[in-house]
Image (cartoon, rainbow, N blue to C red; front, side):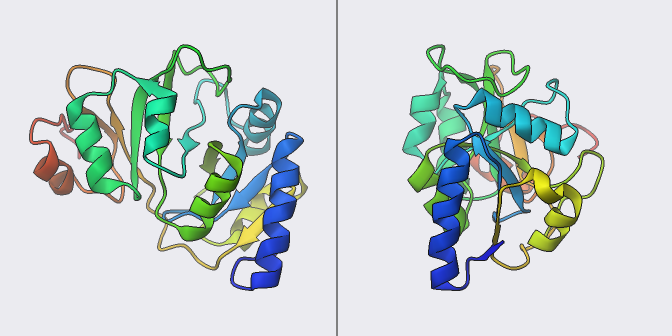
Length: 214
């Protein structure tokens, strides 16, 4: 475990994280929502380890975090103007967009049906890690069916030795996850409520489809 609040530990932790990701390892990192469990997005072995560590099925594909909005264009295709407007408004931040992935990509994030869920977090340590290592497959750092971890200690208690490197930046802002919007259809649709509210989304895209239960 390495403290991101200590410059020496942070530098050592980032170095160990880079080595771990290069050899299909797993890293727990802070985000602006909850702690995340990360693997190299382009390393199928690493993603399989991530799913096993969480006890998660391939039926729930792993989202991808990116360090720059420009990366969205490299990973996805057929992005609508409305989806781009949401990204412009809420990135970096707590919005995840489900998009059609580029057909040329050679990765295996689970049974994604040629889609990918993408987010740019609003957390400086996470951004620096992403810029240094490229897109990461990241899921919440908890066992499936357990509450998401808001401290690195909670993540370690659940995931233990399955993780190679823990990066500790203190408690996250809360346990509320990102808001997920499906941008693969003709109309944008909210599929999970989260830190970005319905009113905020509608202020940017009034036509967005929100389930009645929201």
